[in-house]
Image 1 (cartoon, rainbow, N blue to C red):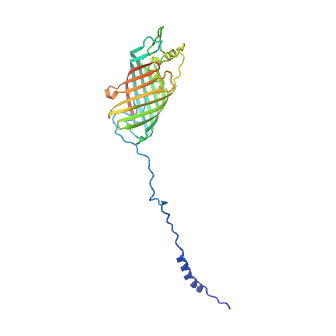
Image 2: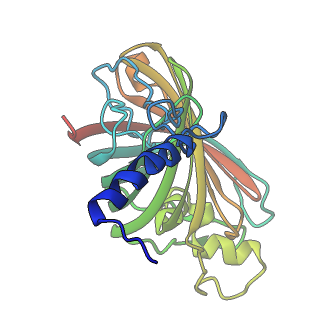
Length: 303
């Protein structure tokens, strides 16, 4: 004998049992274990890049020392961007010089005319600002026009006087990378590397670095033989600002692997003397010269 229950009665018996089963099922916790830090609100912020250093600027450009540039733009603006300078340097003449060549008549030279003008345009892009530890960095190019208002002095030898073959005008170009760092608000150091014609400028400042003199120094009977001048050059220097608008600077230019190993040191005293008068020391294998010069730098961009 079979008994059947209506569907509504069966639902009435199952409902209390289902409610009890639902109550005993434990709730699954969605909280993360301690220490995982899944919440974005409590995550530690990553340290960002250091802020550019800020210094007071004066009215004189800090974008170059004498002939070679620094990584700064204009009057020392520490920001990424373009810079453009115009520079004029005039090497008046040799104040005093000395050589040890056995083929020269005069071992000491003084008050000789050099008469070399160097008109240059320097365009750079500052690609890195200066921070607490990092230096400012710039890359740029220089274009230089050189001309003479006096012929190159001849070489006085025991047998005859040798005329130096030197052009009255010439143009040069070079590219460079420069790094500059302030060790103190009033003292900065500069270092860089250039590739191009800048070493040729150094060879034009003394008759003892002409091809005729170098061939004689190397015991070459053909004094007109061509001399290969390398393009790479290391430069560096420093600038001291005892007063905001009166910097004193020194730069050294060292061509790499060059004949006679010349080195040019320019001492910037112009704003201190109020005459823009500078001193240059040129040393090479077998001699040295102390020269006087005038130098003017004009910053066009940024204002």
